[in-house]
Amino acid sequence: MMKNKVWPIAICLVGGLTVTSAACAQDVVKRSHTFNVSSDTELSVEAAVGTVKFVKGDINSQIVEVELVIEANDDSFFYGGGDINSVHLEADQHGNELELSIEPDDEEVEVTWRITLPKMHSVDADLGVGEMSGELYTTDASFEVGVGEIDLVLHGGNVDKVKAEAGIGDTRIRGSVRGDSNSERVLMTSESELTSTGDYRIKAEVGVGDITLDFKELN
Image 1: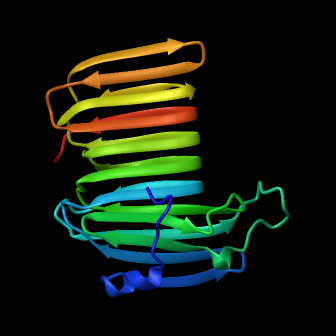
Image 2: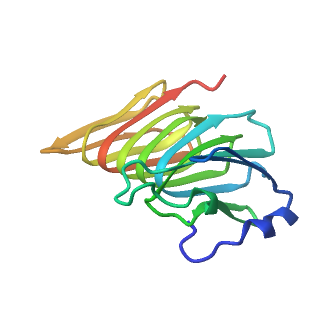
């Protein structure tokens, strides 16, 4: 992920990133970004508070579109939340890696991500508090939410192993994927696992909350 190194978004403009932004109201800011990618691109997303929604784009597209809606966090300890106008996307794109995060990334601001993507080489998404949802193509993937929910539809059943773990909550793996499945619940902890004969490994983790991974046939 992007713990130690991120490049300012101005640098990414050289690499084919287009950016638009608009202040819809005093308390809401919208920004949109476009990245050139390939089927070998490894996507990483890191966010603190908000919603991350994946949208399944054209499988052969070479574009990732990111739309952000930035709002003050109503649950913030400080009245009015953070400075939404200072919040922007940090992007580090080098080789086959595309790493995205929010700066400044604090709990005073709530960000809704809408990420439209083709089939990627891998997806790694990390959210502190909130909901991760939507649809994407099955690939090597890791999804993690501290407190909240993971509710994803994955298109394609070519999996080797799928694992879902909730510290406090429920886990479900369902749909068209076939294999040996197992679910275990101990007190408030839940774990579901499925193994098959395919290629991809998928892992989802929630500290507190529920996980649903729903597999559909790739049309």
